[in-house]
Image (cartoon, rainbow, N blue to C red; front, side, top):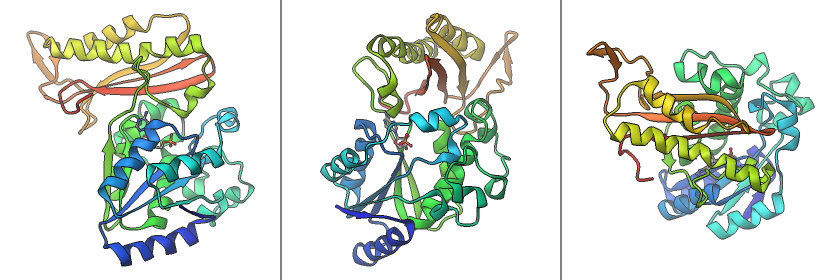
Amino acid sequence: MIRLPDPRSASRWCAQQRARCGDDALGYVPTMGALHRGHLSLVERAARENRAVCASIFVNPLQFDDADDLRRYPRNEARDHDLLERAGCDMVYGGTLAEFFPESENAAANITVNPPDAIIVSDTNAFMRDLEGAHRRGHLQGVRAIVERLFATVGACNAYFGAKDFQQTLVVKDLARAFDGIRVVVCPTVREPSGLALSSRNQRLHADQLAVAAQLYQALLAARAEWRAGRRERDAIEAAMREILRDARITLEYVAVRDPETWDDIWENTINDTKTNATTRAIALVAARIGAVRLIDNLRLDDADQE
Ligand code: AMP
């Protein structure tokens, strides 16, 4: 596996691979490192579906709303490189904030948390504003800003993202429309046997906290059980989730049920005086803190995925 130090050299390598393998044969997996089986499932899939695969490791300060979270974010580059290579990755690259955002004065200092005004984009899309957008100010803006630069670096490719960060996949799909030849592939969430979604931040949980964290998945399963039993009232499904998460060790930020395609949570149709959603699509989402660690997860309630 080739290790490249900056976006410029990565860009050249990607262009060479397209010339060698064709425009639709380069797979790309963006990450922030501290890799686990969730990340590697994306790389393995990219390796199965493409003739060349690259990944990036960049802990993007712009998407952190909390300097402490950024400081504590786990980093282990040597281990990550080894795992990437074994999963079938051909090239990994990184860079500094200043290399990705040469136009930003703040970036030169490499300490920015949240996007500086110079690179902020307008958030006209509903999915930029609420849930993650509301609870982590600037987070999705920061994601959008860096993914735009990562896409510009790699160019035409099949780009693999995890469903675990569902709102992020909406941002990324929206962004990809502005690029020629970038196809976004959303992959299923990889979980522990307990149901806990794998996350780099899980490393910061103690054994007893890991057991508490698994309740997030139980809450999502409760939502799905309600849905499968024919329940369509958003408030009732959310209440079933809250009921599971009534644990003093869990600080709940939100539970939500949305249409995963329109991001609609307005359940307009009134049947027998009850607001219901006529859609056949739904996704339940949750965010909570356990100690100092913030976790998010989600689950399709309809049968759109096989989890
Ligand atoms: P991150 O390093 O957290 O930015 O994640 C890099 C990519 O891996 C993102 O597309 C994530 O959605 C994806 N990812 C993170 N955790 C998981 C997981 N448990 N299962 C599948 N994909 C994941």
